Image (tube, rainbow, N blue to C red; front, side, top):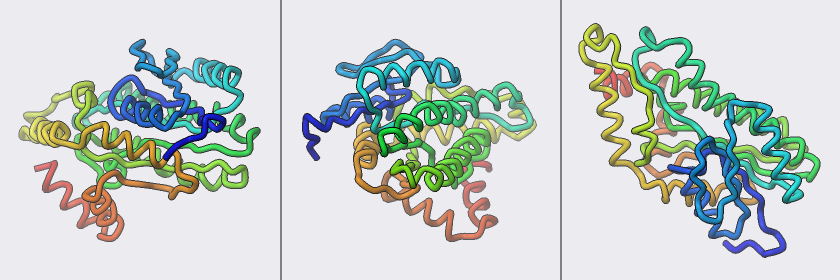
Length: 269
């Protein structure tokens, strides 16, 4: 796919300094897009316009979005990749950590989208891509708050898509599965209560992290996300990879009781 020089898409990606955000930025640069990275760390990728932005700071986000619009005169695509994970038993997870999980994974996305929608509406079009997770439908024990935050992303995405359709603004969520990135190392873990849970917390998290490190390359996920971002029409939700598409279909088809039993047998024994 080649974009005409006169039609270069202006893209904002949150969390584009690492992981699938970085890989998505690289893929969109190859499509001749103008890419802006919103992230807290000053580790700019080559040819990417880096702005130091904390997505949980609404005023910071509003200012950064305005800066991009003033320089480019348009914002065509926003991809919300910024996020992290926490793990541990709900009983022993502090409310502060739980709120922080939602502040970044959900409300950080909300801040960015709320800031860009007026500009997209004014330009009569745009594309919003929210990065969810297979955990949004295959709810992972001992990553309960992460799963809940991604489920919230998907509900929000589907509702927002209907709100913005008359303005030619399309909204979609993309569900990665296990991806081999720094996400694993960055996870905030607590093993408090592991003895009470008969070692199930540490065993479950260790198993999930092994799966992540054997997972898809971020470049593969980035190319897929970029492809969806540039499509003329999108569905409400996509899963990355045939195996995860199959998992998501099964989660919708089978009763919740059966689905929960299968996931529990894998991650909660």
